[in-house]
Image 1 (spheres, rainbow, N blue to C red):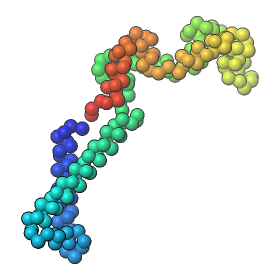
Image 2 (image 1 turned 180 degrees about the horizontal axis):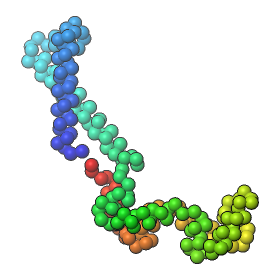
Image 3 (image 1 turned 120 degrees about the vertical axis):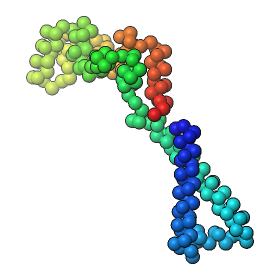
Image 4 (image 1 turned 180 degrees about the vertical axis):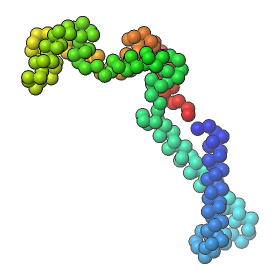
Length: 190
């Protein structure tokens, strides 16, 4: 938050405390907070003491609120998504973003076919066989001799890629741009 907002919050808390104290003083004159006015013989000393106490409390509360706000802003769910930043800052079009995101939802068979590791016919054969037995597709492909352990591990690693890595591989972003955007995502002012 900006220093101006911080000052507004401090002033609001200070006046809130002051109003609450005056409210308590007039409605409950025998209460312990109201008896604080009798600490000093001089009215001015009492006013200065109360003002300093209220300033200290307001400062402490406003700093605590801003500390918690900064911690909250760093939480993952509060940050804007990388894709939103990429589109809003014209690094990508929505279509290119959808294309890159669609790669994250591919299944192992689709990844292997796109990577040229197996054919569509081999995938269909394995899927038909999978309906008869309850095994995962990777094991069936290895059992049928259509794919190796290396092929399956390659496909699994392709499936685990995050958006930034996909965009770098497609040439849409450089490592430097991605790093800068990820930092901006984490500390983006709103």
